[in-house]
Image (spheres, helix red, strand yellow):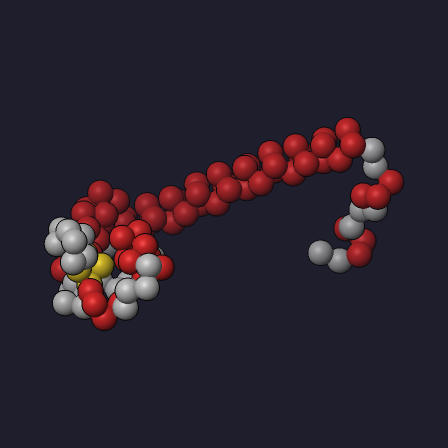
Length: 107
């Protein structure tokens, strides 16, 4: 933001500041909605260009995700696994916070 777009907020009263905050929050929500809409339109175009539907692409993504190799398994519940990609699962975060080593869970 450049200096021509800045406001001196120090001179505003509490009600004026609250109004600015509400307006800003509404604008943020509108822009987030527009971003999601734009992304969906792009997704539809990608699906159409590939001769698929969005549902088919999502289903293919699910099966690809399942095929990734498991790198870590919860020693207390073998159904809980992690591929090492994305956010660490809660069970692993908790175990590491308790002093366990990540290699304790390596498959």
